[in-house]
Amino acid sequence: MKKRSLVSLLLASAMAVSVAAGCVSVDNNNENNNNNNNEPPTPTQPVQLSAPQITLTENVISWSAVDNATGYDVYEGTTTVSTAQTALSYTINKTEAGEYTFTVKAVSTDEKYTASNASNSVTYTVKGQTPPSTGDTDTSVKLTGKVYLVGDSTVCDYSLTTAGIDNVYLPRYGYGTQLYNYLNCDQNQIVNLARSGRSSLDFLGESNYTTLKNSITAGDYLIIGFGHNDEKSDDAARYTNPTKSYTDESKTNGPSFQYTLYENYVKLAKDKGATPILCTPIVRYDEKGNYTKDKVHITDNGDYAQAIRTLGEATDTTVIDLTAITKAYYMADNAKAVYYHTHSSYVGEKPNETPNGTDATHINKYGAKKVSYELAKALLSTDCPLKANVITNAVAPTFEVDYKDAIREDYVNPDYEAPVLGTSIGTTQTATAATWYKSAFGNLGGNGKVGNFTISYDNANDKFTVGNGGNTNGKFESAGDGFGTAFVQIEANKNFTASAKIKLTNVTGADAQSGFGMMIRDDMYMNIGKDLVVNGNFVAAGALGTNAIFKREETKLTNEGKSTTVNTTNEYTVSITRLGQKITATFSDGTNSYTQEYLDVKLGVIDNDYMYLCLFANRGLVAEFTNVQFEITGDAIGA
Image 1: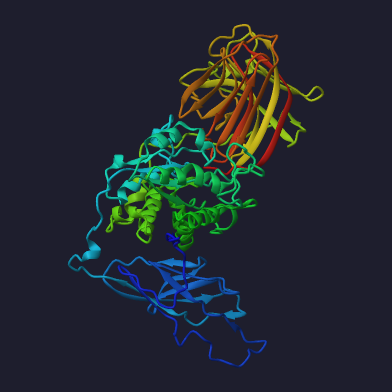
Image 2: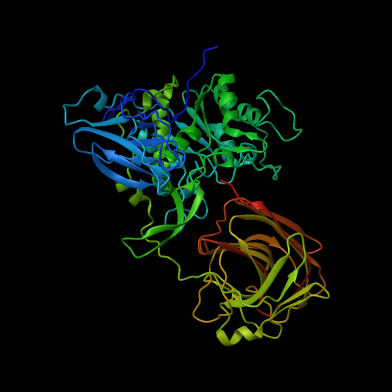
């Protein structure tokens, strides 16, 4: 069986390298590499550090750490261009035609060691202006048919979602949105069916999967980009097992990742006469540059990227190894890699602001262009017929142009600081000991109305009371929210589960803008009810008027159209669970029981560090919450 190319962009320690514009040559015979002093040092003599061995990939010099070195000096010829840097790479920024030779020395601030000899040398060449050659001319042909994409939030088009493009400083973009820049095609020939939060398993229940089955035809292509959410072993609806083969149909210990991909995507495309292309998932950003384990999709249950490589090899299917590709250019310059990612806000003053609130999983438009550029370039090294449609002289995205284009120009940092919580109202000893606080805020009718809310915890009876019986302060309306709450502050990167039972002791004065229940929200404010518009994202397992379960997203308030009754006789049960991007809200009034899943209500837009679990009530309602359970269940990673 003919095997298609498995493309990996890996950093190599090549003995000789040649790259044009720049062109690279490496000399490993530098006579200065070795310390010619064969005499062992005396106890009083400092020890000379070993010389690093450097390599050059495109315009990035890199090397391994030298024992006992505290930094590295980088030389262009005899001129020092970087002194005592701690990073293990250096990016060359040369645009003028010529040859530039670089070496590196290891140095130490410890007087017991002296600087090393120079490393081997590498030469970076920038070509001068020459007449166009075949390499400068696009040799691609126009795409016929369409390119379909399926996958998760690292692939999808957010402009097609209900909320639209994120209202953050550097919004999320899936790489599928930028692929048209690097293929000889019309933009509408790219059909992006990927959806945020989905795995290869639960995507099968989406209307977009039905669209794929009904639409893809002979001559089309299918790019398959799953993996991030297949790793969710605590979510049976999404989890797939990476250790099983593509022929394993069993469900024990989870369905096979390979089988799910092959039977529902690869085989579907081939049966339709289309060409499937498997992509391994992009890496997650690590601020320390440690691209191992979950950062490269190696979990306790197995290696998801390797499962895709194995599937491609076994079924003669093209694999583009985006895990290896993104890992390589992230490690080459990790400080630069952070700018490929989504950021919720910025610090400083424009135009000299810097991004803040890094999302380690999701990429911005600049990052999406980089991934799609590398994907297209990698296709050229395969025998996949789509390579004929890759624009051969496409220009790589640049920080100077494409990063600026990724910034949402109309974004303004919210006037917000994480609240000073003050004195707690008590601690519940649940699976995770939870410290609770109280506040009334938002649209209350003025600061003087804060005192109309009763918010307390009865430790002896393990009972919270929240509300404002006899008053009609607070509301949920299109412009913003106002309510009283007992709440817990939770770190933004945590999964959790929470539940409670509720009895209403007062409903007098309640109307369509009255609400009660349990809420997980982005932002929190402490006892302020005047000149404050509160419309941060939230999901509520509760009732708004006579509608059960509601949310606010990108300032828009919506309910799920599920009917309930609001009275003092019902016993209500509510729960909220968060697993990565998936939030599940459940509400029962004793007669009706509803569950709603949200795969992409984004928290951390206003408060980058925390989210808030609220027991809430307002506008004539008084609620008693008992059997309140809360547990942190791990770190939230998802796409």
